[in-house]
Length: 357
Image (tube, rainbow, N blue to C red; front, side):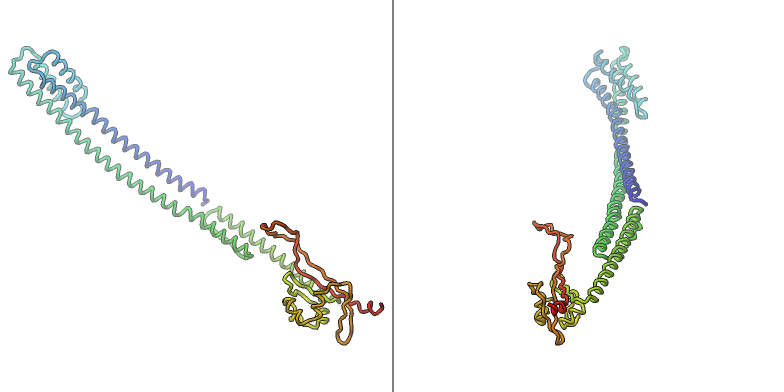
């Protein structure tokens, strides 16, 4: 599966969970709010109306004055329009009936007192029904809150679990292949061109591994080809130097002997193993002729060399090897286009010319 699809799937799932979490939270908040609103609108308003009617009865003597009767009637009408609980309708109708008897001039004072007591009893019944409803709705609200807490807690745990899985897996899923890629590049920089990557995590990293493996293979081929060319050229040069009749001595930038052909070994009377790879400083102590060649300041004057009871003359030529400075030091204030990589000393036999002169 591609990284894009995995990211889309993981964060899409997280988005759905968070969206569902928010929807459930809104649902429970609305449900609790609606329950509280209904309780406040219905039950508490009924208690307000019954308190107003009871206050009229408490604050006025019988028979009720027209103003008191009008206040009671207004509160009773409000109650008649706010009946919500079972049994409340019958009790409210009883209050209406008793109120009609209470304001009836034909009723005696004793009858009105009995009617008032019955009205108070009915008002108490209405209050009791609404108080009981408030308690039940309060219990229902608490149950809803507890259920909401449980559900939201469970969903929060699921959300945390998904986040934990995403945090644990996705960074490693991406970083681990990148670390392997960095290590492989380090191996390539150390000329280990046999390094190969094999990813099975995603299409993107599989494509990256194929591209890297192809690159490493091509670089290895180029390195082998270049090395073969260098070795071939080195063999050709050594063969040419070895077969030339002139004496040739070559050194590197550290003043170490790189090569010496047969003619030079014969003149110096030294073995190749004694010279190649050895510093000149050590060889000069044991060979006066070699010291003369290295320190020769007048290459135009022939060197006189006695070998095998025969005196020979050689004309010396010193060649400094300068190579391009492909990696200049960025800290140097002055940059040079090349640097000395060694010296080549050539001795050409001019004995015949010297004899003629």
